[in-house]
Structure formats: C-alpha cells, structure tokens
Image 1 (cartoon, one colour):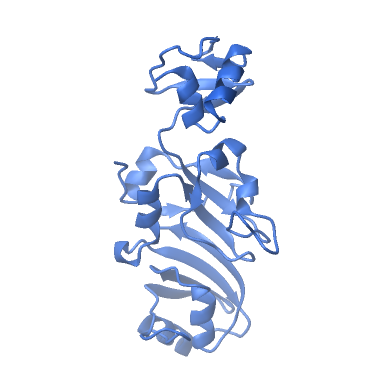
Image 2 (image 1 turned 180 degrees about the horizontal axis):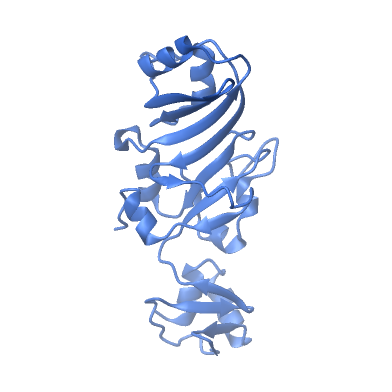
Length: 236
C-alpha cells in the first residue's frame, strides 16, 4: 500500500492532505522519516508516527470507552456533548460508530468500531451478547422485584414480556442485571415495570469483556484480537 493511501485509510484526511503531511517530513514509518507519498509500505504489524504521535496500522478499529455521565451517543447531540468528542479526529474520519448506545446519564462500557459486522454482532438480540448493568434504585430491593425481572415484565409499547438473563442483589439498593437486547431505556423501564425506579445506572460488561474500572471515565482503549475472539467475533 502506498504511504499516502495508508494514511488516508487511517483517518488522516484526504489523499492530498496525506501527501502534504508526508512531503513536509511529518511522517515516520518504523522509526524512519519517509517523504515519498508513493513509497510502498507493508502494513503487517506496522507502526508509524505522524507529528511524533505513534500509531499502529489497523485495518479495522475496535474501541472500548469508559463513558462518563453527561454525554450523548450521537454525532448530532441535542442537549449534551457527544461521546465522539472524546475520540481523536482520526477515528471520527474513519467513520466509527457506537455499538449500541447508553443514555446521557448512564456510565460504563461502550464499544465503537468502523466494522459494521462487529456492531451488528454486538447489538443484535439474535446473537445473545449479554450486557451487564449495575443499577442503584430508589426503594429497598424486595424478592418480588427479582422474580418479576427474571420472569419477564411487559414494557409500554411492547407486545410480549421482556426478561433479564440474570438479576442479583448487590446491596439493599443496588442490583446487577444482565440483558441481551438493547431496547430504548430498557433497564430503567424494566425496573419501573417491576415496581421500583433506577436512580443511577452503570454498564460493567459486554459479553466476556468487563470494564476495567482503572480506565478513567472519558478515556478509551483498543480492543485487541484476542478480546474479539473472546467476544465470539472474528473479523472477515
């Protein structure tokens, strides 16, 4: 792959913009400055630098973010900043999208990718990828709530009951709830239908990938190949 095409594929702008970056000596490949836009580059295990910032060549990108409160999962937010503002511009240029959404006041694990098949695999109810949430509720937890959530509750606008995959207490006012769907405000609506109210909501895991709580809110990291495999996804 030519160097200018490689940079373009990684989100560094148009072919013309990438050609300028290279000709101005702002790009290094494998530790060596390269000023030839037409240089043929082997992308296998490739690391490169643009303006002294190091990047790894990635045919597709898979990202895990610790979403903070007060951010909307939209490119065109209406009332709060966009979660996409927390990502580098290069990733925005690559067209990354959220693999499912979290409400603006919900925190926790959020995936992004420019691989449409991965996004579909993570959000499709047919794939049965579990999402685990920790919810703090207004009223003290009662056994009847857990029974209702596991048996299934009927949500407004739905034709059939929706059930949790699992539901367990964490303390008197906190519970852990696992679901496979991603309906609008689903956890909040399920808890309300079961007779309580969610005061705070946090997603702690998607499938086998558990959020590392040492990752600060608003920060992100790459999801690597071995983690994709554990999620049951193999890129085409």
